[in-house]
Image 1 (cartoon, each protein chain N blue to C red):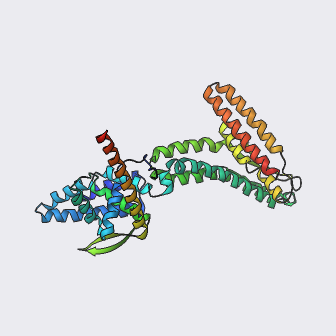
Image 2 (cartoon, one colour):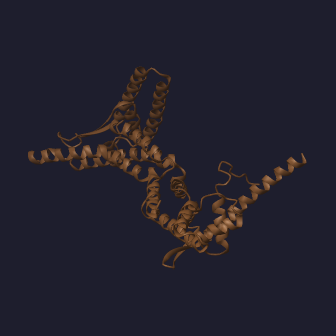
Image 3 (cartoon, one colour):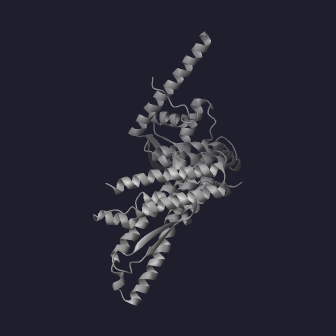
Length: 281
Length: 114
């Protein structure tokens, strides 16, 4: 095998380990330099140039082994790399949930800016409705896209590699369509609009419960302005969560599902209590 | 004596310890370092020659090593030397290694005299 094809194989093996760009080029340079040095020593000792180069590559190590070692070593140099489940799973999921909450808060803020919606002309109102509709669809999927992009950047260089990437992608994709934001524009005077978070299935309930930790966006904005927080949404979500979990548990009929449902109820109660604690501050 | 972590593989930290020890004596480049390890250990450690570079790069990233480049015979060679942080790390690794070595030796003595 010639020098160029070995280098190409090395580069491909590094890429499979999630090592590319300047880090890969640095390694390739050092390995090439090592082989050149080793070759010249072997030639000085009397070996033929081609045989010397081949022997030098063999002594360096097989491309797959070198790349695997490089992937592990470079990953172990960072805090996230030493904790693949945090970087590859927990962080993207937590980031996604945070983004859902952040976009809901942003949405409610924009809604508050358009408090005088009914004063707009018919043409402007239609344009605004279309614009908000597009934004709504974007913000429903933006957190999911951001989480996937983050995963694409970091997960591949974790020891879990692509396997971990796909597991996380499936988890995130299962959650992503499970919660949906809908804005009702204030058409009957200020404070007549609302932001609804629809939860679909058990994953949706869990995500919605987490979102409730921050309260419904509009309620929190009202709270910052000194208004009292309405407990209605929390009670509504509570009833919906219990109803969904009961329905889900009954339909599944297995101990595993029952345990999951019970876990969701406990999680909800904890979060709801924390939420209520914040609300009564 | 402070308890030592035992979950790590026995030889996981050995290449790092060897690199830091050799670079504490003098500045070296990759091939020279590998040759020195091979010569001094009499071939006792069988990790591939190329595996030393990812360790070097990690140590540079963690600021344990400092590096400089030099043109030699038309090729760019990277020389590595120990930083202050690397010196501290070496002292810590040597202390841990001493503890492991003493403990293993003590266990051996108990077995011999038991």
